[in-house]
Image (tube, rainbow, N blue to C red; front, side, top):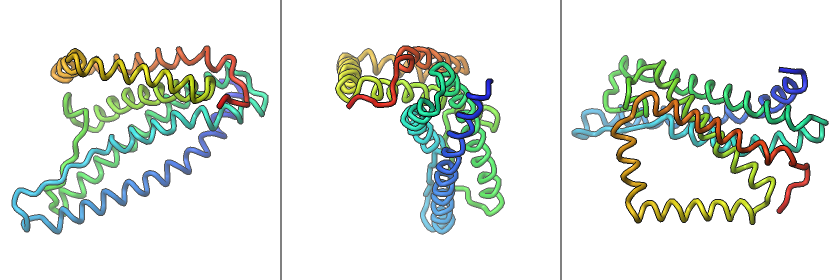
Amino acid sequence: MNNQIKGMFYAYSTEIIRTAKIFFAIFIGCIIASAIICYLLLGAVDDFKMYFAIPFGTYFNVGVVGVLLVKGSVPFGLKMGATRKNMYLMHLYFMAVYSFIMAFLGSTLQQITEWIFNIVGVTNYIYVHPAMLLTDNWVMRIVVDTFVMFFIMALLYLIGLIFYRTGLAGAGSLLGVLLVVILYGVFEGWMIQAAVDLFSNITLMTFVMLFLIGIVLYLIGFPFIRKITIVNRR
């Protein structure tokens, strides 16, 4: 990693860290508030249970960051004289590191709060996680979330590049075509059947394949960033 990539990585990470702190502060507040509700209703309402999925929040966060990775770092990098190749590599490093960190923090947050809930006797607050389809533990949650979040970031990163490079008309046309294909697949039934088959036979390789698809999506983005300019099309 050369100094130019390190500089861009540090500059963009500093901005994202501030946003991540705000995100986790709000997220932890939501967990505490919902846990208090569960504690107050414990025994008062029969069979009351609250389900909470930390990944829903972290997956949304990395998706937004994937889009902002283009909008925030590309103009800055070009103005600072960075080469497109270095920007492209920095984006890969950032997506990999950010996916792992968010997965680590999310799994650790769940582990710590589960211990606290067990101590205070909150038994009606239940976490759900994709790792439950395999083996639900601290390590497996990190592995699964890292793979899934990298895929989400790569997908939204590619969409962000398309928007930046071709403008609203080009990206809107692409999203429109994808929407038509999805709706056609749903109405014909083959997409629903594919989803059922996927979720009924999930293994660790399923998430590895998702990660590899994310790599392919990242590679597809190279032609877009290769000719990208500071002034994007509208």
